[in-house]
Length: 386
Image 1 (tube, rainbow, N blue to C red):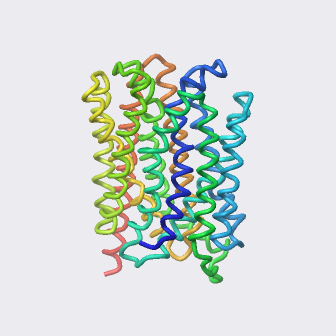
Image 2: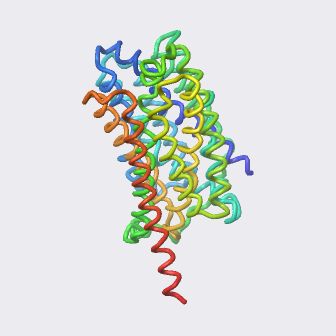
Image 3: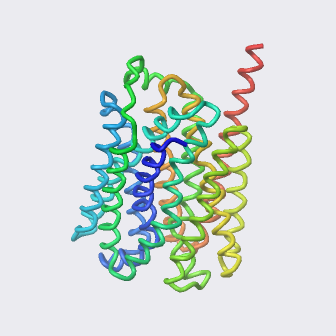
């Protein structure tokens, strides 16, 4: 794999750490600002909505820049957002810092996916995308657990300072390793926008949003679920996040390889597996060993979807993939926000900390239904062309 993929993975590592580390620090953040756990969970929704807005907006605004220069600017914005979060004296300013950092997230992964795919042969594009997203998954094995431990030991603000430093390292890596590829003069903003007239692009975005709403309905509340229901100590949350992260890495790499071989069948199987794991988690969350095993499987099933979903939207936006790719990252995070909100709503209504699991299972089933419909349209088109 080209060295540029390493640079993209480093940037993804920093972004993944800041996105997910807040899950393990919800109790500490809630205590600092005297807000409830579900209210602190809105920091996840706020970040996700920042991605939804920033992904298409910044990709469109930066369409006149070279992709390398756009990636550099996005990492600088990411660093600024995390510094603001680290010094925020109020909950509102912490939310603002999260949103500023989030604005760079979607465009980074959207543009980065296009760059990653352009560096390899067509038959390896999903694997190249998965390699970039490995930084995101490794963040869950190393960055998130270490950030959680750091925040619990030295205060959650120290975690955001550490993330800002990760951003600087990612910025240096992009400057040093990502080639300044020539801009595609045949593609402009009008061409990028035109792909949204294709129904299959919207179906790809819908399956992304629904699938990841299922993931985040449960994952957002993993810390209180494990401490209040499974009976783990708060210190064990770090190791449970490591376990989840191991699943993410394995699932992400598996999803990329599976998608290169058979994209839509892979999506059917992975979304079905995610629904089953989440449904089972409703019951296994009540005992420590079964809960730990399910967390590993949850991580694998949840992130096995990433590369296939990203490859699907890029395939259906063939000819002008950058904005559609960024929009898919927005769809991931729209799902994150919606899932986190629905999970918090269930907890607020007194349904318990395991309710987000069965809600997530239903959302994953909805994503599978959209995927099956999209696949049927593909088959119909092939039959009509004969």
